[in-house]
Image: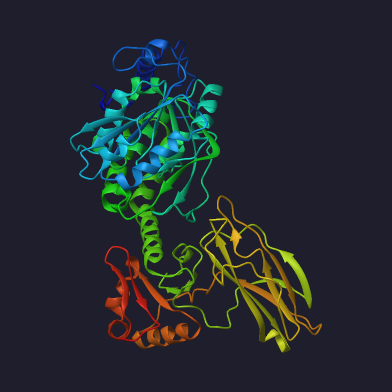
Length: 547
């Protein structure tokens, strides 16, 4: 039975014991993989990469002792009450360009129509178990699989058509690697592409990168494993759900070479029932997986530095990142795409990444704060550097007249992840329009900025040949401080409304506002309806309507 088994690995105090432990580990690995030679021990100097693995057929055996078919990929789909997504997951495998695969759906005690969905697809093998969690379901699928290669596809995610072909091609070129991994794109519950940060492509020190916190592997389905690695790591650890993927990546990359490629091979779905939305549980599990490496890293200063950085990430940075993600989800569910939003951000620009919606800091700087000077002249055309990011809105303003005191024109430029955004008046590409001879336009707009930041071409003219200045701001420069009292907070709110704000978002990290500015709180809650209220995420007030 395949299950998690922690290997004995005491990396302790003296140099001799470290070397002896490394030799023991190397011998264990050679027995599991049929490798000859040695591995680099964990010394105080810079670590060496893991040695290449010569894979033996004996280590490739399945749980029943048989050799796996030489080219077969087993796609294991654990499912717990995700029948409404499962159909898409299965079809994404059936439409692969690589044809030598099997699909195993492990029903983890679902109470929905998972069984009916599977029955509609005859090639799919169905395995039922009492509810035991994601790691257990994956281990069950591993136990029932026959393939030489393995992919674990969550039921709410999808593979892109070339995923298996890409993975198998990479692993054949690098047979010494335990797994290869690619990139994903992020989609919502309906399959629309969502903005996401740039994904890292790690070329070396994968273990160190994972030790630093987080994971460069966003979606489990982007990973294609050699079956033989599970002879060594023994599957997923149910004790660290929902961070079992991260735990496995740490255990594998610590001892084996892996490879990361740049191909997008899967779609990772964000929706209201994602397991990773339970931030406290995820944080606790990730810390447990991370701290399981503490003995291993003690003898190496490079590893220790990465480990300390990872502890800080999981304890401090991760909760904030997840709050930002949840705010994006709440905004997506409750506010229109053309909404104008003021965010009590404390100056953190991450909180303004709201899928291209117009958003600015609250409290904002005084109106005469224009942002950064982009260009100057009576007329001209300039291409921005690649800094336009998906989910952000940028304001370009043209000023002229005496001392450039008069705003002549402005244009809003959106960065979007989807190359085919939902059509709207604001999303439609803009054509040059002259008003009293003044010209200011951006082409393209919106700007496609999925994997990399995008660029746009700004064209301007003051119309009368006089000198002009063109400024750019990411929608509202932060005032640099919090309001002095409730009266100032209310004044700033009204001025923000006058500048076009339709909604006010107060993130959970700024809930202290509602206690500190009592008069402000009473005014807002009495006057403006809350369209969303999540005590762990944010409160959103509709500034357009008065109660």
